[in-house]
Length: 278
Length: 284
Image (cartoon, rainbow over all chains, first blue to last red; front, side, top):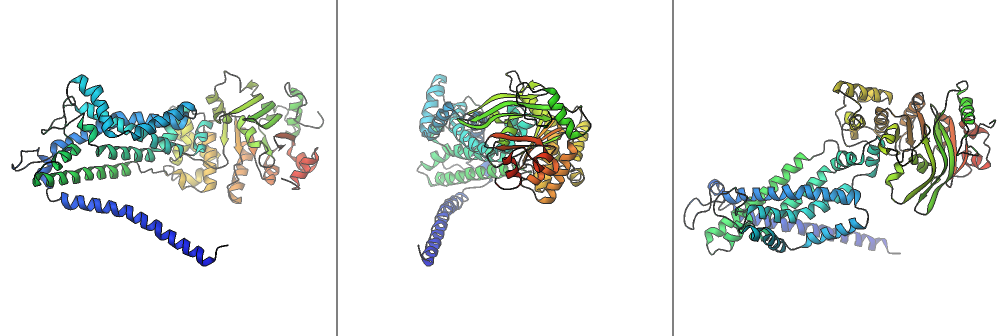
């Protein structure tokens, strides 16, 4: 038997320890965000958002092309990756109970762990090289490959959380299996699945490596999917690696814009998927 | 014949006169009551475990049939074989026959989806969908394309809610979430949802086990009303409930059907000593 005093001591110490760890995580986030905001706002203004890059020293240089490019590339990636990922997750959760499902789950986990630069090189080999030039389309495919496993696994987890008795209730009313899956299971899991999609979008929005070999980058505003396209991450990489202070400041501002976009997207999805009946 | 037992000695060919006489005896004067479902030599396995052993009984129309017995005796398993809800559990196996209106529901050509539409089910834990009250009741009507206009849909939802004695309480908030209802209201909503698709049989798996006495009383009154139109099978742990609302009672023990008889007989002068021990609270 431990004494009451000793148990209370352990209780308090563990509470403090876990609280400190939680603070450490949040603290890191606050420091990073604070640093980005502090450095980013200096070069951030309206003209920065609506103009395209200019040679060093010229006024009114901006990142409009990179903002548009990132939106297009993410949309393209999501357009391919989200449906495939959600359907794969539905399969794993609802039907993939046997050996094939386990194999699939293992492969998807492996794909999640593949370094992004490898995905970039892979897409370069299958798309950029045969086409003969870099393209936004290849960038979208690379991002989709990054996204799909994340979406699939979070969708699977969220669908597993749907109580079995909801499925039984629908089946007992004479609902065919596919209607139960879409109308009850997926619908109930909507906000969880949307959160998974958001995590995946946030993840790929910050990727540079897969784009380096696929969409490359471009100093002009372009919406042509078959040609190179600018992106915020590439622009940040390009500016940050330059020797000019002015470009460093622009890299910080572009980072702030990227973080702001992801944040805005997160809030929007939270609002739209708020389940009225949950 | 005289005993009124529905446990047929040769259940694979249950004799119709016996079923009629048994049912007629309960109804007093209505010999037209016939078996809605019949179970013959049913055994059920979870993997290698035999959960039901050679069960044979008939479920008459317009009667409440109660399944009682201690936990793990197989009564819920049996209930779930009646609408093939056990099909969704992996590694299960069934032997014997279950018939609905004389048709074997485990025949290979059976359309399980339309079978389940004919046999409604109410679960132990109320399980409304995370939708509005209206949409919960309308769900079964919509997926089965049972209504042809918005007005028809609305009138059938209302009729179902009325039949489940819930209409007065929810008529002003049909668009609100079903999760805002109390436990008893949620369970009546689940009953309304089951009634909406106009089933022929209603299976109830301990529908009152999570409810307070007042909500329980409402559901019990409802069950007695509903038997005018449906065959009702109810699993219950509450022996007073079985005594109050059922016409026939089946007592199960360790996967076996010990006794199946008129409820009154089960609770006053059962044939089996074990039944008497259970209903008088000596074990279980």
